[in-house]
Picture 1 (cartoon, one colour):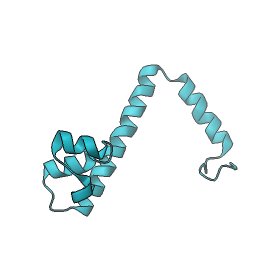
Picture 2 (cartoon, one colour):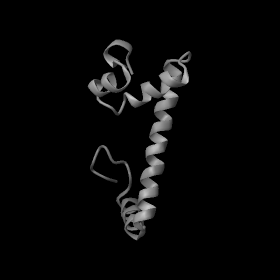
Picture 3 (tube, one colour):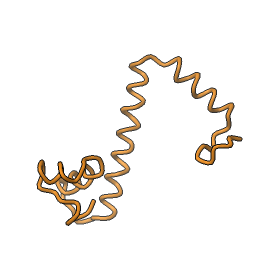
Length: 87
């Protein structure tokens, strides 16, 4: 097993994954990143819906966006102050 406490993947599996990534075309790599990004965004939206079940679609979108956009820009662009309303 790995000695890295943050990596519980066996070194042989890591090597297989790295080799697989090396064989991917740039378009395939980009698609993988896009899919993973979308998955993270969907998980964030599910968390927002769990924490704020009465939030409308706009509020949900702002709460998700506020997890990636710095607070000052959220206020300037959308009038959404996470210091007042949270994430």
